[in-house]
Image (cartoon, rainbow, N blue to C red; front, side, top):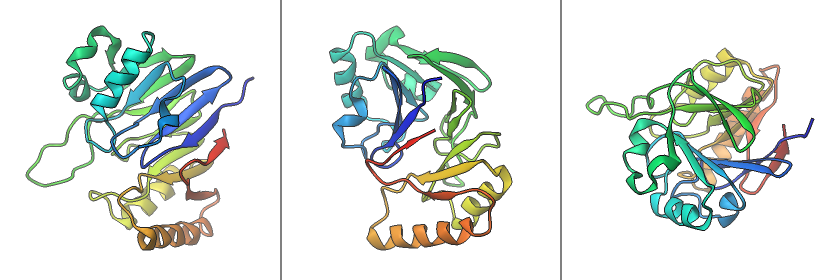
Length: 214
């Protein structure tokens, strides 16, 4: 079996490599690194917020690669009319194959951000049954490797800790950290280190440019 390598890019973006097969998840406006897009044949986008979606960059990538396909929720699809049928709308419970990866869709809506604003569409992606990217939601799913938001305006630290304790994956990596300055990152890291002493699995923050083998 060919191992999968996961590389963290800016904010909430990861790229998955399996031999010559490569996909990227949530390369948004807060992902400036060009390497996130390098040689990918499929882009998975959880939802339409700017930190997860960069339409103009996506249009350029599609122009450069005629084989590029986008898998996403209805809300994002409505924002990408120029890509036509290269955008594949996916829903909760569906499974599909993208660039050699088997993906299952988990979730439907973004976590509540404001009491007066209905949540936008949000789909999480369980890739090869090995790693789960939830976007901006905290759905319950059994998975070996969990990618979890490290910080968000819609989430408190107790939310994060209770989510980790409930899911209890084999390992968890925090990301979604682009709004934090150096002090905020230190606080997040210290909280994760403390929680790692209480949980029976490793949990830490992925740094930009860091790669791990799943």
